[in-house]
Each structure stands twice: as C-alpha cells, then as structure tokens.
Amino acid sequence: MMWVEKYRPSKLDDLVDQAAVRARLKLMLQKKDQLPHLLFAGPPGSGKTTTAMILARQILGESWSDYTLTLNASDERGIETVRQRIKTFARFSDRRAGVPFRLVVLDEADETTSDAQTALRRIMEENSQQTRFILICNYSSGIIEPLQSRCAIFRFQRLDEESVKGHLRKIAGEEGLKRAGDDAFAAIYEATQGDLRQAINLMQTASASGELTADSVKSASGASVKARVAEIMKLAIDGEFEQARLRMVELTKVYGIPERDFLRFANEALGSMKVDDLGKAVSILAEYDFRLVQGSQPELQLTAMLAQLSALKRKGE
Image 1: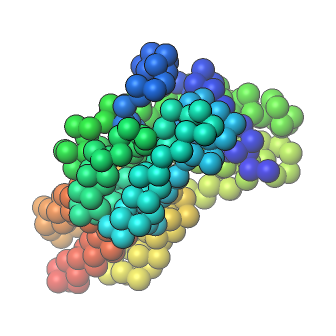
Image 2: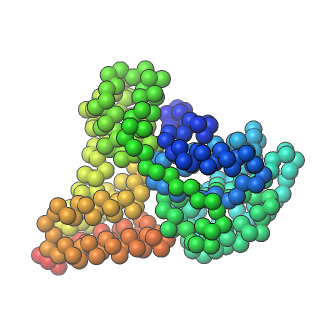
C-alpha cells in the first residue's frame, strides 16, 4: 500500500502544521449546516485535498462518498464538465440519509477555464441550499473574483523543514526503517521542498531495501528539483528544445512540480547562466508566468516558453 494513503490523516488534529486553518475550520464545523463554500489555496503537498476529504467524512458521515463528487480540474477543465457532471450532481436534492448537503470537491480548480468558472459561479448560486463546493488550487489568482467572493478562503502554507521531518520520522518508526537518520530526512526535504506528499513517496521509494540513508534518497530522487530545472534551462538555452521539453513534462507530470514553481526555479537558474541576452530571457519567463496566472494550459505554455528560449540562443550564435 502506498504510504501516502496509509498515513493520510483522518482528523483535522492530525494535519501536519496548518494550525490557523485547523482553528478556523473547527469553528465552522460547530454549525455544519451553515458551512459556506470553501476555497483552499496553497502549494502542493500542504494538505488541501486531505483537509477536504476530512471535512467530507466529518460532515456527511459514513455515506460521505455517496454524497461527494470529486473532480480533478486539470483533467476535466472545460465548460462541458461543469454543465454536465457538476450541474447534474449539484441540483439533485436527497436528504434521506440526514446529511445537510451534497459536496463538490474540485481539485486544481485554477486549471479550469474562465468560461467554466463563470458557469460554475451560476451553479453555486442556484444550488446553495442543497450543495456546497470546495475549490482547491495552488494559486488563488487563477480563480475568477466572482468565485472567490462566494467562498471562505483558506491559505495553506508551505510546510517547514522541521514539520516535514517530524512527520517522516513517525512514518519511519511505524515502518521499522533502519538507519533512518536526520541526514536522510534532510535530503528528502531538499529534494521535495515542503511537498509532504512527494516527500512520503520519495521516502517509500528510497527505503525499498528496508534502510533509509541519505545516499538512498539521493539515488531515488536523482537531483534536487532546482537542479533538474537548471538542467532543463541549460538544454533550452543550448538549443536542445526536444530534450528540454521531455524533461519538463517528466518533472511536472510525473513528479508533480507546480508549473509556477518551475518558472521560479527557472528564473533562479538563469541568473547563474551565461546567456547572450539575459533581459530577453527573463522577459520570456515573465510573459509565460502571466499567461499561467490568466489560466492558460500549463504544459502548452511551458513548452512554448522553452521553444522561445531555444530560438533565442540560436539567434545569438
């Protein structure tokens, strides 16, 4: 069994860090039937989806899955999904189990198109008596203002090193891992940068032999996220567009690095590289960062950015 599921918290008190979020939600849960629509914003692996699942179980009881629709907006981001699946689910009223309302959990909601978000706003208004929504995103700026204004916003913080290492130690103890020293946990944090989900997955992979060491972590993770992004940027600047694109897709899709974190690390990498026109290269990054904020398709935009950087280098040669 995947450790990330095996050790997923089932109560608010078990969430790693996020004390301010826990305190506010506990107050709201004192009157469950008056719970507003919620918007969870924050970096990956900070507990947003887990918190939504905890709320669903606590509010809806044992039959929570029957009354909860969970969608990943990065896969189902268009207006047809909103009109067909969400609208059909949200408008149906069924109180036979005594639950206060139905629940729609929309993960990665900032990947939803503007048209779909506009349609979603109307559905939220029309069905507020029988349905509540939890919107989950990395960046609240990707959610249109009319949706934000209809939600209670919770901002999740990137987990600090001691919080992540403390949680990993508990799991390592439960699994009976040998030689699990602080250097190994530090190496995991360095590779995952506060993403607890990714940190647990990395620890499970690195400890396949029953031991957890810094060397096994480095072997399992390859290079740190920053180093991988730097490699991708070097490939692009050197004109190796196809290789840069393949590694970018692997980093964002397989390892789950947020696209805007990719851009942040890319900007840091440019500062230490010899680029013919550094100002132009930074301007390219800024343009695509803006496009992502506006809700453009992330993989397509990052691919186009790498293509522009590759072309920039070839022109300078």
